[in-house]
Image (cartoon, rainbow, N blue to C red; front, side, top):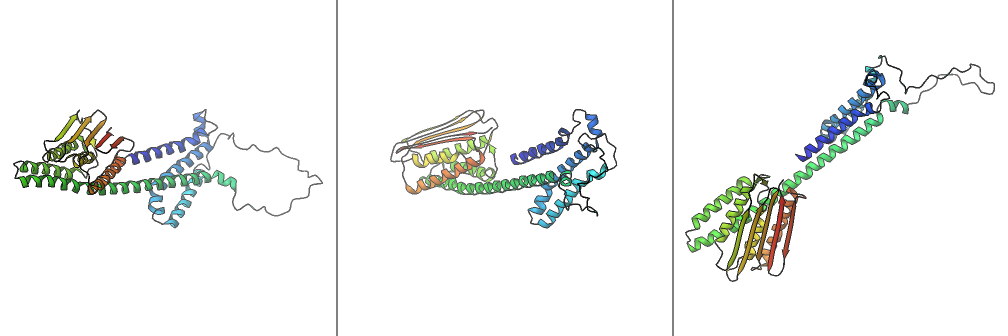
Amino acid sequence: MALKNRDLWINILIGLGLLSIPILTSPDFDSFSDMLKARGFRENFIGYLLLLVFYYANYYWLVPKLYSNKKRGIYFLSLFICFLIVSYVPKVLFSGANDFPDPMQRQPMPERSMERPDDIPPMPNGPKREPLINIFELRDTFFIQFIIITILSMLLRLDNRLKKIQNEKLKAEVNYLKAQINPHFLFNTLNSIYALTLKKSDQAPWAVLKLSDMMRYVVTESDSEKVPLEYEIQYISDYIDLQKLRMGNNTDFTFEINGEPNRKRIAPIILVNYVENAFKYGVNPDEASKISIIITLNPKGVELLVENKITVRKNSIMEQTTEGNKNTKRRLDYFYPDKHQLEVNQNDDFYSVKLYVDLT
């Protein structure tokens, strides 16, 4: 949407600029009525109006339909026909029109004596040959303006196409990252429920219901570009409720939600990766653990603060975490370029993440 708005405004400004040139350069600029009566101004204005029509035709049709589809011969023939229309239609329309004397028109030269001095040799007889291309005629036929408009519209159109290709590539990459993330959550949650079933816990049905709500969110909402912020918060809360099932009494756990979502929207499943890491490294039945998760909602965005003591050290888990963090960072860069701040700190036995996302 932003790309379309940008192109629209550029095309509007170019149109206004082209139509203002004959007005601003008219010698009768101070008198609007005289300017409208001047044949030179009317020719000039119609010429620039046709240039504008050609610009839009080249931008929206000729370049994408002919040039980009490798129909170059038809494209250049179309350019030549457009050039003839832009250059000669104004002259044909006003060829018989009366006009005030044009101040820019060259004044007639005073008559000279017909007597030829004796020291000047006579001119050779015979008709005078005209040059094949008269540069002054090209100047009067919008040749330079036509070339500039052709190049400008072509460059803008090709740049627009390149940006669309890049956006499509980024969207495909983000969808691939989502496909990697979703099964990861599912496997971790199933492991927790499996532990409950081994213990024959009465909480197993409740856990299955929580998992069902989480999977419904993943299946129905994660394909959307943005979802209501309260849905994302609820997903994190459900995930934490399931993770609590495998906590022991030796875990110092804090979870807080401050503020209201206020109808904000956020990219789905973009916060939970850092919450998951806290449980991955911070829960150990044989060692005292500490996990703190605080979500703060303000009028402009959301802040996630996650801190945990590192009690589990496994190289395979570390590799998975590094890859998950990279995926989340790439999604943040895609959805919120220059609108998020991420701070990650880690030492031997402590890990913290502070993420702020501007949702305005």
